[in-house]
Length: 83
Image (cartoon, rainbow, N blue to C red):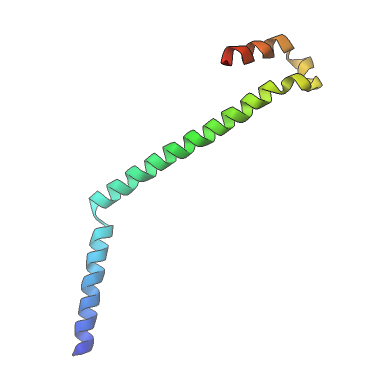
């Protein structure tokens, strides 16, 4: 008899845990946090890409092949407009 009461107690605990995990409120809050985390992560990645691109534009003056394709005055105008 003791085994059945222990099994019943474990089933009740499992049922409570599952009902908490499947609740709408919990799912909504987890989705909200995931969305905020995604937005923050995307912002950091975009900022890093923009910073790398900006450094690339600043160092273009020292690359002869790009100087032949794009006039240095055009690159200087882009750099000056971002400051």
